[in-house]
Structures are given as structure tokens and as C-alpha cells.
Image (tube, rainbow, N blue to C red; front, side, top):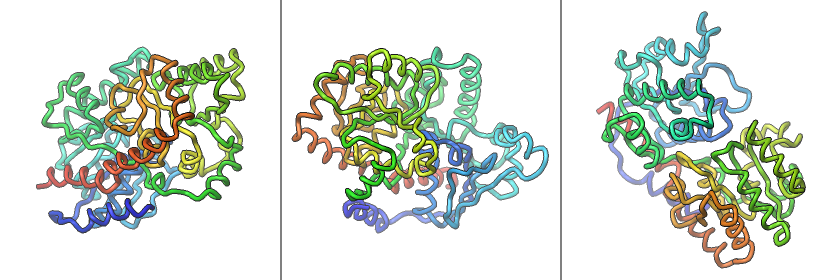
Length: 406
């Protein structure tokens, strides 16, 4: 961890806080244990940060089934699994409703639904509840979802916003959407930005980065895309930008993420335009598929710090965690002018219209040719990232908990 980040954390530790009574805080931990994308990262980072910076509390993670990928080793963090029939068989029902019995047994003071949901009927207990809303993508782009899934999400999300004691929105954009689509009172919603794994802030040695490059067969220089390969995240236009630059810039694009139908459309474009050597789908390679440190993202900081730039021109995001990870990594970032992305990138990103592949290509060309701009983006990115330091984000959430118990 760099000196400036350590100093920032020390300053917060030295400041005076109101001391509240010890609390038992419960979390819907399904995604903390099993999700390898944004919802999982948010859940794990918040739990780790709260356990570290507010150690007087006990944190209970309600997990429907054991995980072989992620774990929590803090002494004040406790995994809770369904342990009697029928909960051990109907795990989904346990998570969505029956878990209330376990919450009462463990004397949980506050239950936090970390991803859009709270147990049905929790408002009829004495347990305070908080729900984090990440985005309402299914409302904005229902055609990109199965119609049944849209109805399920709408019902669960609306219920949570209606019955939770407090709603956390991870961006101003998400708060606006929750008010607009579900009519949730604005005063019930608190914007609390997320952080990312502190590992991204640790500058690695050239030897460490080289080891990871060799492990995954990465090229010496590469652009990077990280995220699910779905239409909204716009990998197709990134590939079109690579095609535009095919005779100018030989730097390949490394893609980390999975997908299905849309991914196949992207791969068809890659094949039809002879870009197979220019677009590397790293997640498909055996070295990645068989590596636990790839699956749990432990190797990602080294990959980020080895890249030329992060390319993330998404059409819409509730937050955009790869942008923040790139800022922490001092990795120049090309992202979109829309939704929450300017909230995260601030003045530290190169912004493009996500509809225009030629603008994405122009940004990639600029990063390859303008060293002064690259250095400026690195420095501004590091400064922007300080606004999302783990302790700052944990403190905001803890203030919400304390307000409910006051």
C-alpha cells in the first residue's frame, strides 16, 4: 500500500467518531461468496472494510451454500448456512424468507441486503433493514433480459425499496432511477459510493507483473476490457475501434469476462474481420479457467498494471467498478460520458460517446501517442480514487446503520 493511501487511512483513524453500542449486523451474502463480477466485488469489499474499520461489531454472512472460491478470515465475521430441513433443501426460500428465524436467533440488529433484495416480511420483525440498489438496468433495457426475469426483478426490487428502512444507492444515477421507476421517496435514499479491493492500490514490481504476464501468456503491451460480455457493456464497438486502428496500432485487446449470445456476436465480428490475433478472450484460456487466483481476481491488479489502458465505454452503468479499479491502478481509462461513469471517473478519464467506435479509436490512438496526457491521467486518476477509499466508503455505510439504531 502506498504512503499517501496509508496517510489517508491514518488521518481517518485519528479523527473523532461517535461511539455506538456494539451491533450484530447481518448480510445477504450469496453474492459475496459466489459472484465474480460487480455485485460480488461490492459485497466482499464492504464486508472486509467494515470488519477492519469497525471491529467492535459482529458481522454475520447468511450464505445459502458453501463456496470454494471466496472466504472471510476476520474473527468478527461469521458465516451462517441453512442447517435444518427444509432450509437445507429449499435454499432459495431460506434466503428470501425463512432466514428471518436465524436472524432472530442470532439477535441481528440490522440486516443489509447487499444486492437489491431483503427477506420477505422482515419489516414485521424488530430488525432494521437496509438494501443496496446498484442499478435498474432491467427497467431501462428490458429487451436485453428475459421477460420473466424482468418481472421477477421488478417485484423483488420494488418490494425491497418499499419495505427497507433505508435504501443505499451506489450512485446519484441509481438514486434518480429508484425515484423515477419505483416512486421511492428521495429522503429515504442515501447515495453511498462503493470502493474496490485495496489490492489495486498497491503498486507491484516489474517482476511481479512479469510473472503474471508469463502465467497467462499476455503480450508485452495490451489494451484491457473487464466486464460481462453483454450488449450494454459495448464490447462490439471496442472491437470495431480495434478494426479501425488495424493498420496503425498493433497493440491487442485483452478481454476478461464471460457471456453467451452477445459474446458470440462479438466473436463472429472478430472472425469475419480477421482480428483473432488482436482480440484475446483471456477468460477462455486454460491458464485462466484453471487458476483460482484468476477466478477470485487476485491476479487482476497485476494485469491492470501491465496494460496500456482500460477501455470501458459502457452504454449504462449503476457505478462501473472496473473504472475505479483502473484509477487505483494508475491505468489510463477510456469510458463513456453517460450514466454514472463521470461520477466515478471525475476529471481523470478520457470520455467518449459509446455509440461512436471512431471516438473510441481516437482515444486509443491518443493514449498511444500522447505521453503527457497519459501521465496526467495517471496522476489525476490516483487523486480521484482517493474519494473512494475503503474506509471512507465503510464509514458512510456505518453512519447509515448508526442512524437507524439512534
